Image (cartoon, rainbow, N blue to C red; front, side, top):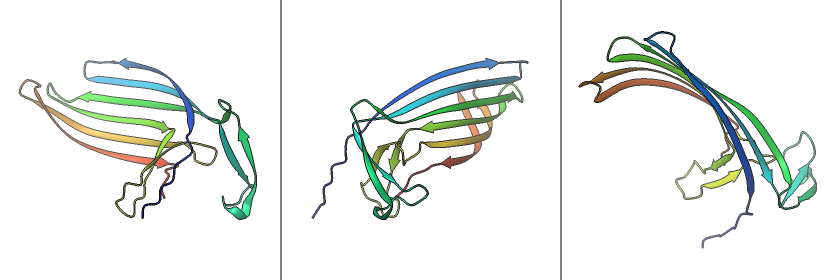
Length: 167
């Protein structure tokens, strides 16, 4: 038997503005920097359960429900997402690069990671599910061959995730 459950349709609105620039103080040094400002609103129609402050979201801490009309804003988030990349040319065909970027995602993929099943669910951020954010740092060595027709690289990165949702 397959248990079928239809999820309540959700609506959200996302906007973003990005400003960036490249700066080359010397022939060997390049700096690329940018700033992204993003905004998101989780919209009605929807019914949101309210729970006792500071308690787990469970039937025993349920207080009441609020109904939001179609198009009304239930919750909103605003984020600043900086990005920066630095490149240093070591020679004519090789370079060293480092970068940092902060990204925010308002649409969450919820996966059941214990068993390989097709139970992935896409869910919008809401009052109880914060947007997922990520800080990523990277550094690498890049080498070009055959008059820049081929590029080989070795890169390392570190990624720190916040508000990651799993079940």
